[in-house]
Amino acid sequence: MDREKQEMIDKVRAAVKDRATWFALLYRTFKAALPEEDVERLARKAIYEFGRLKAKKDPEPFSAASWVERHVEKGSNLIFDSEVAVHEEGASQTMKYCPLVEAWKEMGCTEAEIDLFCDIAMEGDRGRADAHGVGMELNERIGKGDPCCKLLVFHKPSQEKK
Image (cartoon, rainbow, N blue to C red; front, side, top):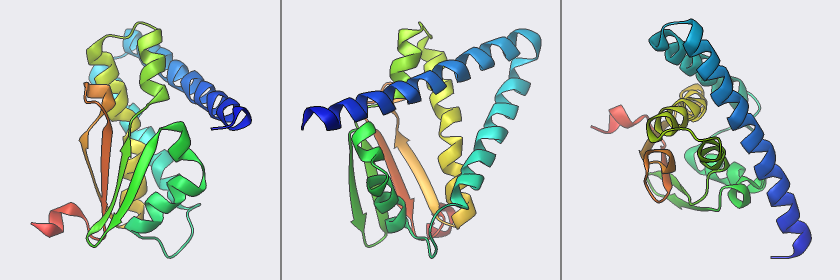
């Protein structure tokens, strides 16, 4: 990879890490003033809504394949060191690096906090998937200690597949 491309990746990762840091600081500050279950519930609600707003910016028609194609088109695959694939039943995205998790580790968050913050951050993807009527599963997460994040997006919501 050329030096300019790597510098751009590093700058975007730094920006994502900044946002992860202020999220953690907000969460901790609100937790000191409010019951933690309320803080978690409200954080999840807000980030889920962010995902629904983000979905409005996606091109139509939207599909599982569109999800991973958009990830690559925006350059997010470089930021998260991702591999994507389109399958008959949907699409998959495997991310081997997470700047959010790195930021939380750097600021000394506990494993439990990192797991929680990661899962809350994923509410954005859950909201985006719901807004588009596609199913989404996240079976592995770097934030809970897995070596990568494995995101599966389905043509129909997962519960309909049963």
